Image (tube, rainbow, N blue to C red; front, side, top):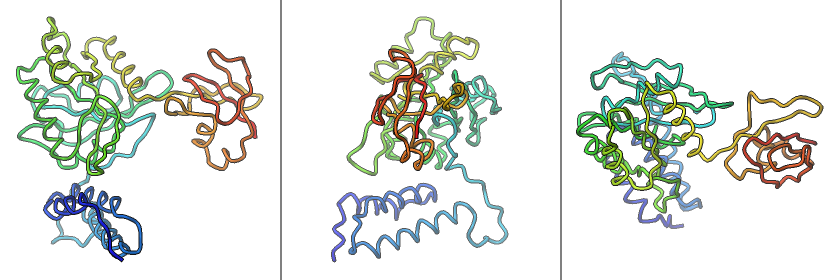
Amino acid sequence: MPANLPPQYYELEREFRAEKDLREKLRLAQELLVMMPKHKGTDKLQADMKGKISKLRKQIEGGGAPSHGARQAPTHDHIEKEGAGQIILIGPPNSGKSSLVDALTHAKPIVADYPYSTREPIAGMMPFETIQFQLIDTPPISPDSFEGYLTSLIRNADLAVLVCDLEADTMLTDLLFIREKLKERHIMLTCEKKEMDDPRLCAKKTILCAHKAFEDEDCNKRKELSKEFPNFPTVATSIIDDKSLDGFKKMIYTEMAIMRVYTKPVGKDVEYDDPIILPIGGTVVEAATSLHRDFAAKLKFAKIWGEGKFDGQRVQLDFELSDGDIIEFHI
C-alpha cells in the first residue's frame, strides 16, 4: 500500500536530515510522525520514526552509551508546566527579563547590568489573586547568541512575552532580529491565538512588555512598537512601579483567556485556594472532567452561585460557566 505522504512531509524530512542540533532534530522527528497518515502503508515508516525519536531522546537525556567518560550536559528543552499557565519571557540582552522574574516571583535569576548574565532558563511562580502563573526567564536572543533549546521551550509555552528595552537605542532592530530568528525556526509571534495550516509552523500568541517605561517619557519608543507590531497587546512596566507590575499580571490573566471556577462540597464552605482553571466558555462537565473523568461520568447536575445567577441555581452539564462562579457537583 502506498504511503501517500503530503508534499510538506518531504520538505520537513529534508530539514530533519540536515539539522545538527539534537533538540531541534527531535522536534522535527515528532512533527514528521504527527504528519504521517495512519494506515498500513506507513506502519514501517511510523516504527522507524518512533525508533529515531527514542534514540534522540536518549542522546539528549544522556541515556545512551557514555562517550569516553564525558560528563553529560544538562538539558533545558522542557520545563514541566505548573499553575494556571506557562509564560515564557524572551528578548535581547539586558532587556530586563531577569529583573521582571525576580520582582514578580520567588525565583532568583542572576540580575546584572552586563549582557548574557542569564545562561539557562529559570522558572518561578507569579501569584495573581487566587492563582499562580509560571514565568520562565530565558537567555537572550541576539546575533551572537541563540540557545537551540529555546525553540522547544517557546513552542511548549502557553503564552510568550517579548520584553522590549525602551532604554535601548537598538530596541526595534533587536526585536526585528528576534522575530526573524524565530521565523527561521518556524515560530511566528502573533497578536492572537491561531491555528496554522502548515503543521510545521507554530503561531505563538505574544504580549509586548514595554520595559523600563520611565525611560520613555515622550512615549516615542512605544509608538515605534505599535507601528511595527500592530494590534499586539502591550503593557508598560518598571520594576520600581508596583502598579505597572500589577498591570503586567492582569494582562497575563486576560490574554490567557481563562477563567476560575471555585468548588463547594455539598454542605461545606467554598474552597477558594485551588480553583478549577477553564478556557473562557467552559462548561459544568468540563469543570468536572478536569477533576477526574470518572467523576464527570457520574455527574447528574450541579448548583451554581455567581454574578447574575440565583444562589444555588440548578444547572445541567452543558451549562456555560463564568469567571468567579462557585459550583457544587451532585452525583
